[in-house]
Image (tube, rainbow, N blue to C red; front, side, top):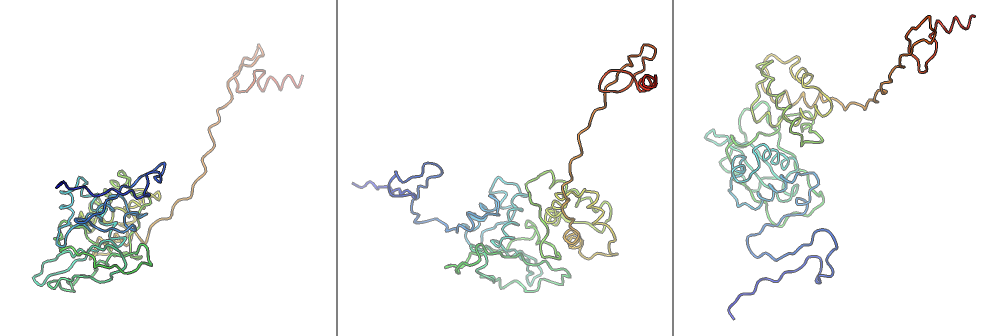
Amino acid sequence: MDTQKPNPVVLASGRNRGDAPRSGVIHVNVRHTRRFTVVGNHLAQHAELSLVAIGLALHIQSLPAGARIGIKDLAARFPESEHRIARALRELEVHGYLARTRVRLPGGQVITRTVSYNRPGCVESDPHPDPRASPHPGPDPHPSPAPSRAAHPAAEAPPATTPAAVSPEAVAPQPPATPRTPGGSLPRPRNPDNPWRHEAAVTVLTDLRRLDSRLLLGRQDIECLAPAVEAWLERGARPGGITAALTANLPPQPRNPAGLVAYRLTAQLPPTLAHLPRPAAHVPPDPFQTCEDETCGLAFRSREPGLCGECRAEAGAA
């Protein structure tokens, strides 16, 4: 009599099993009463985010306020590499699910303020500002713009609850914001999942200091600029041509090498080359034939055996 009965299982497709679809997934949903997170379909079924980014956004939204979500912390928690986690975090920033800004504390320490949005575009300000943070991080001549927050979808009602904010984290494990560009964002390749092209892009950016010591880029700047170089390579540009475009006519003392490289990668992005028609297939020459005149025996090319040209001319004259 004291045995507890389990929660009833309800099929999402209908009350009767006869209503289940003949193919595809069948949902068996059980009502959650504790330890659950509400996630909108605009995130779970996002058409542009990768599967790693969607899963990472779900994990971040399920964490309590104050949890650490640095790249090294996430890499220690999940089997994905730091590179894949950094790329997923950038995807969430581009689509407005995550905002990371640098602020300077009164003591001079620079921290990264990380805010998670469960519905992008509905909250425009920081819901939990840090009273220790100064609104002016310092005399930076080239400040990094805050990432854009695109709404998906745009005409949604404001959320019922305020998104959770994540506590500040150290700058070292976090990638920097995208450097300043003419259009506000760096170009990106259409097919980002190409490890060989990404490795070539990282090599181009790393070797810039070999040609000019003024273009010394940090590891985090290289990770941010690598997708833009991949876009150049995807459009048919060769690594030597990209290096020449980035190192030509440099100013005497560039104050922000990463911003300068980002500007040139965006402003000088080459167009996509038109498809060239394939050349005609190689036509083999006619085979060799031996002149049938017994006194000649000259070898010549012809489709059919017979007399050579001189012998035919003499036979015609006779």
